[in-house]
Each structure stands twice: as structure tokens, then as C-alpha cells.
Image (cartoon, rainbow, N blue to C red):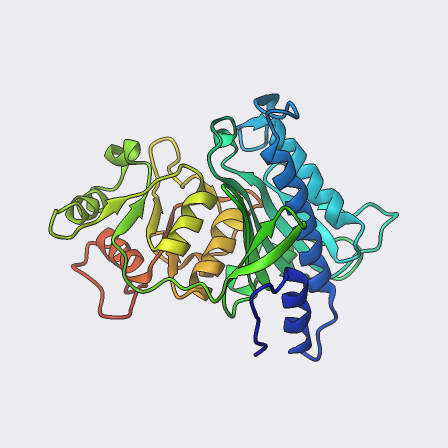
Length: 343
């Protein structure tokens, strides 16, 4: 494995990683470079959103039934424009678009499908809280010019890469191809992402949770009981909730923690989208030694049936996810090292 020194840029990291795989074509490298470019553009716009007149709602709703913010539209278009001409994608799936987006006929196509939540946590834009982009990358299995639903409606374990960009006090790009999770921080003075978080890991245990407890009365009583137990003074658990999935996941990946978004009366099948929110973050969590479940089975084993399918999500340190899954199953607790539900 290549040794990466201080000052390693994202481009160098990707190039040296590709050299370690003699059969690599470089197309995934190109795709990730375009993602980084789009991330830089979005970071710049987020940082000066107030000055650029980008705060507030755009005046419509997306396919999810959510109010669209001005920056939602900007981020969605920026990522699509960055990817459509590079010859690496055959299809793009976005939270903001009803159906799949195909590459315009004037551009060449490639073997990858890019799925994204272009601006997760956009309801936080006007409050200057952390927001970000979440993405998943599949290699196509279909033939022909355009991708098909068969290319994306697949288990998360078939992803070739996943990641996110968080726009907060700094802009951080986190990626994984399944072997290790690495973070790169944008230095705005030189316009480059530099390796800042090597081999990010989620240790087995944690004593921190992230969730919207305002909904707790609507949760499964067994989950309510589990959360009540963690609040016992002798256990020393703490609550850390930002209110954007990408922000909460990033904090937990760096500091340790478990994120919960259970079903509620308003969202009985869960709220988070499987394809471009739950699956990519689950991919990162497992690559970092953590776990992700819908309460019954690992997220990466689930197969979405529609582009915008929703799911409950419990994600973070493996012991906490294991305890939640077993609590929801009505069992006393899992054997050491096992986090999936019995049966």
C-alpha cells in the first residue's frame, strides 16, 4: 500500500491508489476528480450564500414532497454538469429529480452510475449549520448507451465507491472504495483537497447518540426502553444531534457515536432514502469498522425497488447498532462481535 505523507493532495492519493491496481482504467479516478470539482464549487457558493442571494426557498417542492432551497437547485445542477461531459457516467440519480437523468447525446458515456443527495440537510442552510453532499457509485451491469434501473436497484454491497462532502467550518470530502475510509480537507487558499483523516475508524463501542428525540413517543417501545437505559448516569452517554444526516454521520465517524432515524407515524417506512443516503453511508460505516441496519437486517443487504425508496436507519459504532437491533427483536443482547439479528 502506498505511503501518503503530509500534504498529499486528493489527486495524488487517487493516482497512487490507481497504480496499486494494474487493471484500473482511470475512469473512477476521473469521476472522483469531477466530484471534487463540483464540491469545490458548492463549497464556495455555500460560504457566500448570503452575499450571492442563495439563502431561502426556491418556491417549489421536489419529488420527495420537500421544500426546495435555492442551494438545492444549484448543487444538483453543479454535480450533473460536472459529470455529464466527462465520459465516465451513463446515468445520474438525484434526490431532486423524479427519474434517472441520462447523459446528453453530445457527450460520451462511461460505465458508472452516480447517485446523490446533492445537498443533504438543506433546511439548515439559513442557520449556517453543517450540510453536505452524499453520493454512491455503481458500475453498470446493463448494456447499451443509457443505464437502466437494474444498474442501481442493487444491494449496497455492490457499490464500487461511496462518500460525502460536508460543508461546515471547513469542507471535508470523505471517500471509500470498500477498503479504508479517508478524509480530505479543502484548503481554499490553494483550491485543493489535502489528505487530513487517514484510515478513519469506528471503534466497537460508543457512548454518544444522535437522534430527534421529539419523535421518541412514536418509536417502538423497545427502542424507547433502550434509549432510556443509555441515559443512566453511570453509563455516561451523551446526546449530540446536528439535524442533518451528513453532519451527524461525519461527527460520529470522527468522534464515535450512533445515529438513529426510526420509523414514525408520519414516516412508517422510515424517512431516509436508501439509494443515495442510507446505502453510501452504510458502505462507509462498514469500511470503517462500524455497522448500519434498518432494525432487522444490514442496510447493505437490502435491495431498493424504487429510486427514492425510504428506510429506517441505525448507523455508527457496531456495539450500539447491535444492541438496537437486538432490542427491537425483543432479545436481551447479542453475543460478542455479532450485530445482525438472529434468524
